[in-house]
Length: 278
Image (tube, rainbow, N blue to C red; front, top):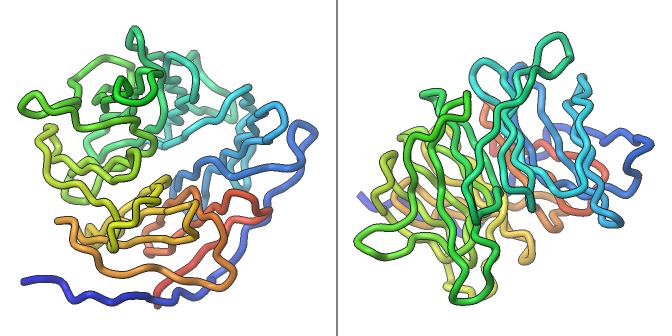
């Protein structure tokens, strides 16, 4: 049965989480979010001048700083996974007593890491890009273990490249792999078989997906930063509706909690907005 299409759904604001100032970064732009459980959210922000990264968790500092933007996710055992944009590896940290253990790394020659996510199985997803532009640009998504051991790659199907420059990634509740790419969201099944490509409800050539997450219904929620939109599609790629809330401007990073509250990190905003449909 085809899903009923609602053009726009207004969400109410549940609360706002104020970003706290640090000596490292004053004018901070939200880069990525990750929900850790128990109402705690990891927030990675970047300062445009000099690109100084200031990652922190609401209620608990993570003393980690970088010169480039960073992506973050948390495994089931609360291990912290950090992927640094522009570097050729992904860091996998275990947090214990507010201290980081010795990190494990993953790297692939000729590629730099972008987005990362964790799976229900305990596996890690990492997006990689070959640093090329135009027709030469392509990427892949790697399944790996928390120890940094390679499992398998999602790159192509029937000699067709799936990704141009994968940015953000998440696992859906049905174990599909959902990836924000250039002008599209690409979805495969858990072993990398292509399912569909979503290019916006109206075929907008300016569709520019960034943060991505999935709700308990397996709907896929997509931040379209440059168009000030958040798209919701079902698990088969059918458009459902746009999310609207008061004052939306440049939504970039998304995560969702066990109550289906959506955390929105707008690019140039000093708070994280928590919104809900009900």
